[in-house]
Image 1 (cartoon, rainbow, N blue to C red):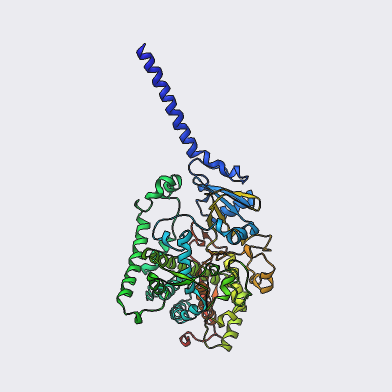
Image 2: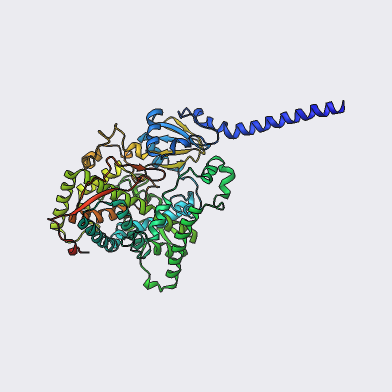
Length: 543
């Protein structure tokens, strides 16, 4: 009798424990996947624990666009257990990124040092650091950077001349990557690394390694499946590739900081790093309304009311707010992302422009005529006169439309809210699919074609501003946009004065792209380059 009672009680206990385990399993692996449906947002069927992450094994660019085409302009998917709402409606995006910015101020979390960067800082810390950094990208500061950029351009011209004389195809993405790294090291940190003459330079190697990131690694997948358990340990768990890249750049940055601290103040260069070091003890900073670097970014554009209103009126005399400071971790974080983000976006854009000119020679000839006319009026390009190159700007803008390095970016939903009748729950992620918007046939006729004339002043004025987002928009737009534009203009005006790009048998049409993090060429971009007979000889290059 005793054993029978014990047996019955044991079975009952096991059944109860089984039920509890089942409920825990269901709560963790099934229940989270009802969020989007409860909001009326269509999405593909998720896998328990993993959600829809396997849709993106080959990258995000193509599958992302397919998702929107199948489920609509407001759709979703699950990144592990996290609900992601993809919004491809430009009116909704304007509300999210500008009008209701306070409801969507932050991006997803990450580990140090990138978590300390402006890209991922949150709330008041983000606002404080952004207010410190914004003045360093003013027009006045950009004018001071021209000689430093020209020094790297001079080396680039010499290398391109060697390629032209060889008659062989070469990887322009790698070539421009080395140029871009030289510019960033000089402009940002007063450091000469000469990666153009040493393509195996460790700066370039580690930057490329950083952007080879993929979600489909055991540790990353563990983070996706069990974020609550793994997030606190993310920075402690071993990750050889991540640790190698982080250690290299952190050590380099700290070494430069130590050198600056040991120098007399009068000998310190006025570069990006020095600006941050100066504010360790506090200085006046820019106000929030100056943060929108994209809206009204056209030179001479009329002031606009709203988040970007203060930028035009405060270019040289900004409204100031109380003194603020930066911690050393924050300084390292900004330097880290300045190196990496500046390297990938500018090098890819320059390479894509070279490729597009090689396969569209009629556009290249038109660009060269504009460049020749420019040099008939100006001895040397500078920050102000390169803005006369309207067709070049159209070419670069169209290249960024077709191949936006930052083709997707995200915001966290701070609180339950409704945007244009769509309920967005707190804790979800809103994803802005710039890549899809750039190919939207409702706004871009024949979207797969390269047509620079899409970016005449008249065409831009007639188009919704939130269907073209290569640098984001609103207060969290790209703070380094002006520097990137200046670097690209200064390089291209000299390149097309002296050279022409030519398609070769190794040139892939269409290009194969990778899109696990940013959008870039999968295996480089191979073209030939020829020296122009009508152009000034390269040895005559002037700074």
